[in-house]
Image (cartoon, helix red, strand yellow):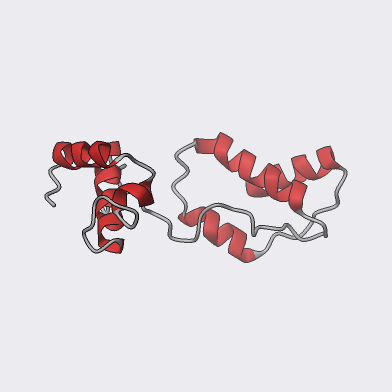
Length: 127
């Protein structure tokens, strides 16, 4: 699929991209693709557009190899609540438990203090 899309978009953009680094395959094999085949196609198209040589440029991809933050250890998809909970806990850890104020988690997350307190209560996160 990767080779197919590289060829398709190379022709479309008038570029002669004939080399795909092994790391591209490795990274894409590890990614879970929540957007399915369309997401792969969009990633390859963007990579081809930003490539200036015969080798596919792949530094623009918004994820890293092994990025499984939205996937459970057993391979199932995490719920939005689980992801929100983890994100809030990470923000609280970074702010050393401070919720409000200029150096609080609410500011870090771009939320109103009361909104964050409400979300924390809903998700069972204690101060």
